[in-house]
Amino acid sequence: MTIQKTAGIHHITAFARNPQENVDFYAGVLGLRLVKKTINFDAPEVYHLYFGDKAGSPGTIITFFPHPDSRKGRIGGGQVGVTTYAVPAGALAFWEERLAGFGIPLRQASRFGERYLQFDDNEGLRLELVEREAGANSEWEFGGIPADKAIKGFGGAILFSANAKRTAAVLEQVLGMTRVGEEDGYTRFRASGEIGNIVDVPTADMPWGAPGAGTIHHIAWRAADFEQHVQWQREVSEAGFQPTEVIDRQYFNAIYFRESGGILFEIATDPPGFANDEPAESLGGKLMLPSWYEPHRAQIEANLLPIEVRELIPQALRADPDSV
Ligand code: ZN
Image 1 (cartoon, helix red, strand yellow):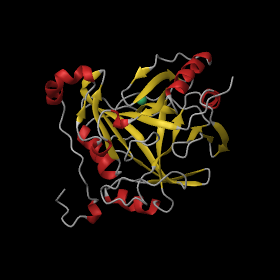
Image 2: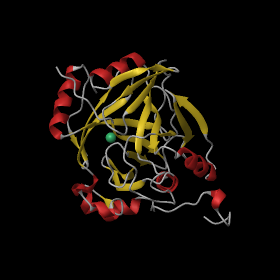
Image 3: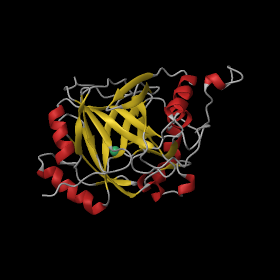
Image 4: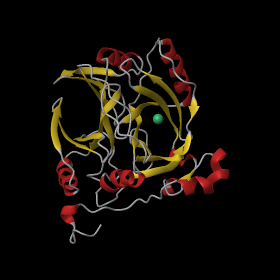
């Protein structure tokens, strides 16, 4: 059996609480594009917000279910522990200044000879930035972040496995990643894509986390097309896991399975993408509903807190500290 090889991360999905704060952080502070404003298809009173590059390319997309009543989660084993974003070479100094300007505490880290700038989002979700040569520069300029400084997409992720050895086996044998090596208490894996392709797993098994706001629900890996996707579903099953049926998520097809270290894995198709139901120029502008919810649009919209994408100015650059 030939092992299929993923190009890397397709998207990462997390829980949040306040939707406007979520938009302010990922669009306003990080400068990502809100590429889709929709609802949780299983719970229409909750938004499903997608942030990515200009087109919402696979490997750039982080998605949230912001629910004001969510309880706080605890980051730990069985979750993606840290989400890594890649920025162009030489851009970290810009981000250090920008994030500090927003009053965000920063931490320095290094792994495999790379320097990481680590911080938390407004809910405590752990993020980091790393400079990478690979991957095209962003074509989305927002909030005073020039293209040669803007986030390109995911650099990768740190998986907090409750069973590191078995998670490693899934990455290599089911997802077709290459083991790069072991250093500083991490094992590094590489997928074939240019972004979202570097995955680190702490060599020590991690104590279990608890789901909730400020934690990641699942990580999705890329399948190039629908045919490969169906093939993967068979292979996941043959490897001893229980994948779901193929689910149509409107912007990609999905299967889900829980890997042996406790992390919920999804495999998602690159097609059809986010211009499937609205023009590429106006992605994220309108609340998009699947057809079966369309007759209930007025009621669904009335139940959602209004949100807007707005430019935010770092405190340090503000002329008047009281203005927003
Ligand atoms: Zn997903």
